[in-house]
Image 1: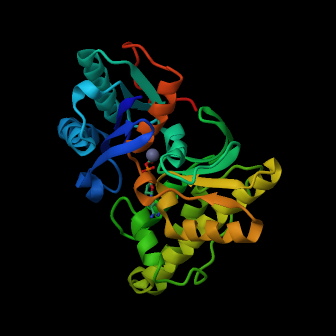
Image 2 (image 1 turned 180 degrees about the horizontal axis):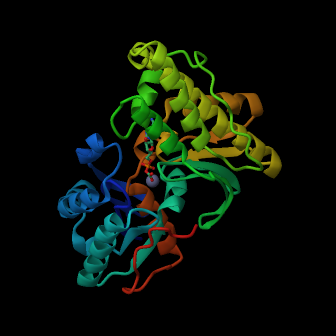
Length: 333
Ligand code: KG4
Ligand code: ZN
């Protein structure tokens, strides 16, 4: 029997979840809207808002899960990777809370947790499976051999897929984070209206910086002829950009599936909320006989439920860390 309280604060979401014997009974997420007008997350502002939100979010999670502090058996927290100032708030709070309640501490790697979000609900993938982890900071194809035995077999050499969405959105004058807005406009546009070049990168790796530049030059050229080009064609531009990103992402997953002879394929991370990616993966599953795993929307973007489930499996292994633990903004996979 175990009740794990988990804290996530790696970027701009303050989240606390409770996992009761492998079941998530609370998952409170406080989003930070303050960054919308800055075109990206402002680290200094993010840590301050975490500081304001963390206690109310903990209190709400305890209410939602109908547990009291004395019922908790361990505190799990995101150690990294992420923004140092943001991580410091969660890690310091977790350590103080654990000290006050005399509880063990569980350190969780944020990128492992995105993948382990697939173990929150049924159906769960079986090992080994491949997971395309696509977020604001990472794009990785991961060979998942066990809960904490994972190998990156391909990754982006420059921008992450989420960055490709967000930077394109910025070019299109859409607020941050632009990914969900591109997704929304894309549903009303023609994905084949404009064609962007596919990067020729070796092995299972990705590159998205060239695509961003190609989009920028294309838009500039079009605006010279028609200053209202973006406004008049926003849906088609979004649909075409999304189509390109999804195509690039899944081409390498297809290659990895063949190379490792694996047919269980999962997606994880913020960009796995993208409806175009979800639909294209479903189509691939029919075409290639894959069994695909697509997380519920609430477990795609940053949340503490995924930290709590990772904490649950670490608690089973009694894998605890000491009070001298520090956050790691560039935590190794
Ligand atoms: O995993 P996440 O919440 O935070 C990080 O760990 O980075 O991912 C955030 C990223 C952002 O780049 C955001 O634009 C993107 O996920 N994102 C989306 C969608 N929802 C979130 N990108 C495309 N379509 C979406 N529906
Ligand atoms: Zn994340």
